[in-house]
Image (cartoon, rainbow, N blue to C red; front, side, top):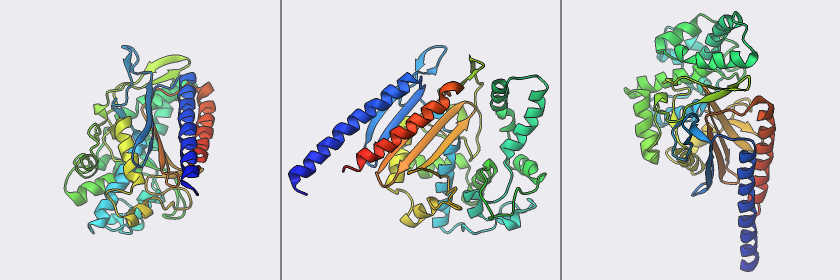
Length: 360
């Protein structure tokens, strides 16, 4: 390819990319997005914008440095921390968790790797607690949306836990399947991984993540305490806007607070395989049963994970082939009647983004 032809293609890609990013702005404005979005490559943030409010009552804008809960995106940080300990030869992926939880009835059948891949069969303590709450909610003749709000709002009382409490909850239930025979999403896996991190490192989960990830990557506005969130969280319930009480989760399955700026730094670190060795990153993105890696799903051409905790939501999409990531952080879910429509349109937009980047 001649230099002139190469430069012409590069110019065409830049123009198409600029126009395509503008389409995303229009899409999110049209469908009342409330939060912040970033598109970044492995070196630079290509576009970052925010819409709506972090606190709707007082019309405080949601901006790129607004701290908000990221829910289950926390699992990616937990997985990286485990891999750091593996690289330091302090634990092994195929080590039985009986070394850490000898009282748990099935601990001699389950390994750390199974927790990471969510193939352990351990039931989800969050779902167990939710089912108990549903019994209470059903006696109040709630609408479907009201019951959903009730479930999320009352997570707080069930997230006031320690290791003993969660082990007590899951120990009363049999495994959902034989270990390593299938995948099933369960928050219990990553809660237990957080406790393993604490036992092995002799420090608390928050300090370990801050020292070994946030500080190294200069993610200055991120923490492992949900109460640090600046944004409030909301939900439409029967067309009425409802506000959640403060979130106070502290577990390794969903406690991290971050900003769209910090999450962009995180995405760049993933694209560049920072902190960990190439071998460890390969382990992280090796999906067991083509379902789940170490904190990652695959959605079409993208590696993906979403987070939901008490009305706060976050999403990350990564393409290693295109060296690109899309991140979303929001505190108000769209109304049900448009939610699926927007998801479909965003999926088409992402597919078109990859097509544009193939011009390089």
